Length: 523
Image (cartoon, rainbow, N blue to C red; front, side, top):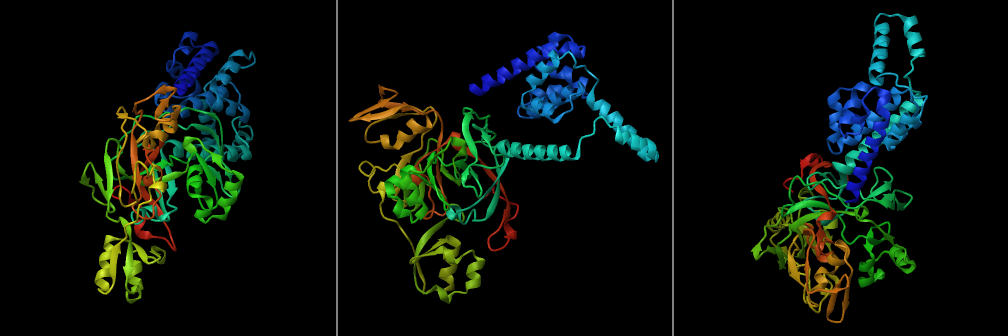
């Protein structure tokens, strides 16, 4: 709603100031007060076709159209300086108002037409080899910009265009961890479509362009939290499909300790103890309470697979996922830890590497393998026995961290758990509130408290709750080496960033040529 109000305010101010300016352009002032029509009237006055102003109704593109016309209007009045161009770009109504009130500001004709005509004279003189005339034209060029300004404007435009594309359309990501091996590998560089699940406008507006949340080398945050805008998303092009890879903001990453290794949530450290993460930096930061509080759009990015979507009931039995009681097919390259009995040194190491089996895939007494790799090892050495590892219960460290009501849950035997759906209503009780507490309080911004057997939402006794958005369950394909929804719970739809579309580069100990420009569609 705030974005809509700001947009309406911008339109009103633009219309009011153009109403004041139009008499200087010999246009009836009432046309300046009519949105869209006013820019259609401006366009010919700067040297554009009238239909060009009609593009001001196209979302996102209108940012470029309006700012471009505003700069051209200023220059059509002889205001050529970098300062005036910057003001027109930042807030066009200021430029329109100043032009209208400045008695010295006189319309000099359509700037783009005049520039084109002058450039035509230069081209004709150059073609006719009229050196004296050419030299005079170049020397007296009223539209000429200094070398420094040309470079400055080019750099600013390039950064702005790249940041604009990154913010709304496509962003590049690199896979830093093996949680999605062997579908997405460490060192894969992805292009992610932000349009697929609906373009999400930025909430944090004061930030370093082209950086997400950290400034390299300095180790500081790359943004300022205020001012900020409320969450807003344009209608999605496609729905999130079950088992599709997704990129999202880490839901629990609002309060985090940040070390050179990774980010840890404050709750995660509190539950498990800083010393158990074997990160000396973390121990010191936890001691000093040195953590960062991040807005939603600046939480860390994660890439996982949406193994369950809103409305599904998920259960994991002996490592296999079931949705609504039906076995869900595993991704082709899904990996598990296998206990290894026998000597792997009897197998040709080159063939192991060709299949993607690396030294780091071997853990204490086991190996991280997919089914193809398991079949190869068994056929290559019948004396080797492989047994899929099934991990014991650890309900206190898995979501929802409530072993009393959800006992014996483990990464391999988990649930059943229902994935909340927008508009659905769920009964609440002390026995199940752990599942929905973070949704109600943090993701949907209600005041929630528990007083004995009473659950209070916004100060009122609550026996049920209606969800305001869809949720998803995200898991890595490296099922035994993935910190995912089993560790921190549901992924809200408003945290969705986009859909991986292509691996544009891949490198680890050399370039992986067979993965470059590989589609992410069938991953």
